[in-house]
Length: 98
Image (cartoon, rainbow, N blue to C red):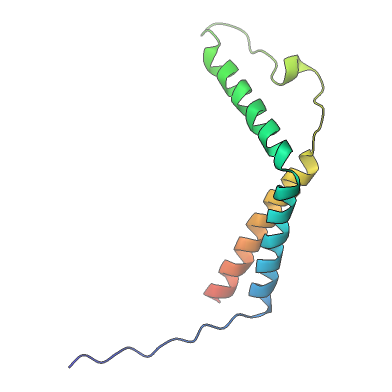
């Protein structure tokens, strides 16, 4: 007869709870900046298309709004939100492993 392996208890420590809260804070910041997400995705795709369409021997064209200064639409909020999301996932993973 096959014996069942002993069940492992899953307990969440303070690190895991903090990780979940940090992740939720990052998702909330992304939600607040949802218009900026679309703006930056459009801008990235425009720059990417420009890089693909450039002829082989041409000089590098300046990227981003014809090399002007960007209208910094929510950049800090987006970067901090993505950082919080990754940090939260890392803390939860750290809690699960150790």
